[in-house]
View (cartoon, rainbow, N blue to C red):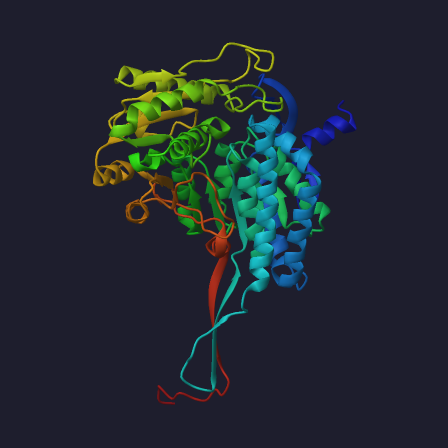
Length: 508
């Protein structure tokens, strides 16, 4: 019989204020991608666990006067600020957990925790600063008409494996600020920091049933949450194929759906950005960061380098030279710059894209293989070298499809019009960047790029105050900023007649 410690380790499902094992008793080992060894165990929930979590969230939303939707805004905001303070307190623990779970470097994990705390503070400030409603002039002193925003209800929040804690916070913080209750389903591969975040919400004093979590796979737990008739909104971040299934499952009940899906993001470099040594070095450095942060496992990764032909050879040669020097290893080790891919499946997928690119005529400038084992890079880990593929074109799979690995493709252009056409020639429209010393060109190109976020002479920063979302197959939802809060609300028009009297439309 399992002892209490083992039972606690398996009790990662939080429903109605209680930590529970899966109804089936099933569990899943969580592997460290640096060595493929299990280091944690979680409950493996299924549809039954999803149902009981939704039921708890529904009760918490539909309760009486003290229910979370009717909690004063100031109290909801105060709770969010307490959570932010707890995140700061536990920064080192959570950063280490994120590093081991997702394979990223410890420094990346710490930065993620900082960003999560910022998100909770931002939504606390946003919701407290709002006006109580927008008055609509009805043309009569006897009519009071106002448009108000109310919580949407029970939210199903389905998050990805690459930024588990950060992506969960982008959904949980605005949902709580709006007054919603929720069930979160983290990726079954990287659930640990989301479980830890729920623990902090409980510690901060969130009422039972408001925050629920079910650890388990997408094809059971996620699918059930998306179709559940008592779920009012489903917010999903992940791949295009899974997002399509979520939208289809949600359609029969016509619930609100927010989708943040994939990206194939262009990084456009004009020659004038490289006219000085400093400009050249900065553009190369940022191209490396754009492509290889978190081993390229970033939806906004700058995985398509589109560089002006006149500087192409110099730029790519230096880029490849520096990419070869990136230190791969276990993310918790000092000096490591890039960790492993999250799973063997993800590495195999990356390898298949590189193989197909080479077969289609791409030129390998660096990488393209598994690295030799080292003291901080076990042979059993899911490591893959940063890879630069030159002489690519839009007919290649590796250019068209999201790889989600440390692979950078290189295309060239001669004119501004051609650069924009290449950058926009994608089914996705999440993010992109333009590098130029010409301010007029920067504004023109940024204005023509069909992407949800466009950086000029930078790559990857995001602001909690700014909306995050995409065009095309990158999704339909918006996260962060006022629009991120609006996703978790319904709009109501309240029309009050202060002097009602008969209308006499009909004889009587």
